[in-house]
Length: 422
Image 1: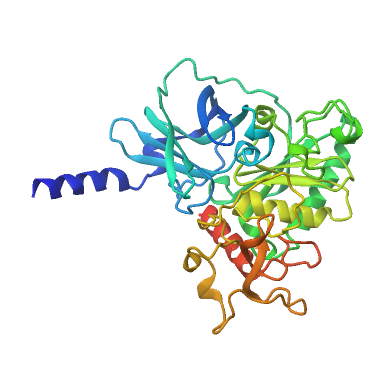
Image 2 (image 1 turned 180 degrees about the vertical axis):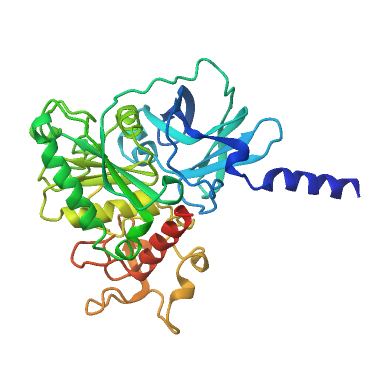
């Protein structure tokens, strides 16, 4: 009987539902870390803690139940051991560790986890999925919320512009657009590009049916020079966020490792999602789940780049193409089920779109180019042609031949919209 009562006590300790006003102030706690390692190991270390003036996230869904992301952040009330906040995410480090470089060197990446500012001391824990796809704890740290070492100064202060306003940030999905490679003289162009970005994003389903659940703002921060770095052509620009093509030696992959500048600039407004709009016509972009998304502003395919990359950053969708154009090796082990909702190895297909399939669907399915959005189980995705399966012949997460997401990707996006707008 004593053992049973102890079990109930432990269960209650870990499942008490967090209430925003009980635990948090109307501000944000930003925790900057360094993520260091190589292809086989990783460690975290603390950089700095910052008390920021604005929290844009939900006041209801504080404990993340989506089970998405390679990494997972938890915050516990130190006194009661109550889980008061959690958050799944991905990082540049996780992509880099699958490159050839990671096999023979170590690198450090700046990363950030953000949460509402707690009223009492907390313990934070960071988890990483192991080779079996199971979260393992990698780091633990106690935060004294009254510590005078928690910084309060705002950095990179700039004015902001409202592009779309549908309500309070606490129950809307707040996108902040950051300018990259726009000079002071080009900020009017940036404003127009933000309007175009918003119009384009909400022209695709299911975003257009849910536009009322979003807010969009922009921060007006000029760069010294116009454009972005293109190492392959010897082009180097002085820009506010230090973005670059050729990330991990993939020409079209346009990202930045300057995490601190991205976060400093985003802190001018409440935000859930960060989008870097890069002043270039060269084809490219990139995105990482709950980190940030990027796209060029003036390529022929810009609208589809916007929505494709936001599929990664917002909904955790995977790339469905298999053309071998990336620098990654063995990102999706065939013995485990990917966490992304639009890929399967068939190891645990019942957790994916199996229930959505029409009766008697052949597995694997033959491509149907006359009905590219028809649901099935099509081999090829996650950068490889064998052993990884996608939901349809084509989709905006695979190519830009069409204008729609497949039913599985639409469902995943809709579920994230519903979850984050409570």
